[in-house]
Length: 272
Image 1: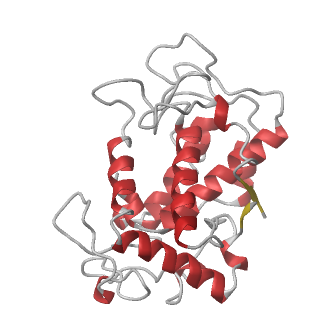
Image 2: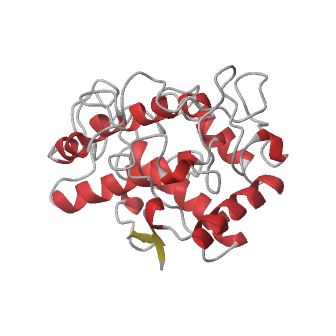
């Protein structure tokens, strides 16, 4: 069984194994398609079909499937690897362990945001950005430069206390757990973290920064925690809703996966 661990508790060997697997996917051309996919589904409305990846009820199951697929690719390189989660309510500074040179590297330099240390620095020759929103081919960050601090545990708990999963109009104006976790209403959890990291994490090509996976693993863990706290609160909407993914509708780009099939994460992984 795959166990996703808090990144703060990883051994040096576990950190290196994760980094090596990510770099292998990158060097073999299997990483960039994830960036392309995310960028295609970042907006709430696309040219065809229902809202899927963001600003809609399927934000959480869509990313759950996305992480499962990525984790399987990592494990095809090294079966011991899982996606660590970054508890940004606890590791809330640029000095936290995940930003060390032996793991993800730190913030970017002041003049252009370029990350210059760690395994994903452009200077290593191993991390050139091919899917991007501008001409810059290097990883950028501006840790803490977004103006607001990372969410606190109390803020996360306030969102976990919300009883309903989602509500009409099923978009960025909705009340409910999903939209408050995603960050369009209330204390703003998920979105605020993307902005805090800055650089590519603040764009549609955010998976260019490997911290994306750790961030979304924690978002997914919060969903799992919410499910445990509210076992009688179902995924909504259930059926017959225009322009969004209902419980038993399939989600693009997979077209064979429904939210209903992803409500229980335990067949795929557990959280330490």
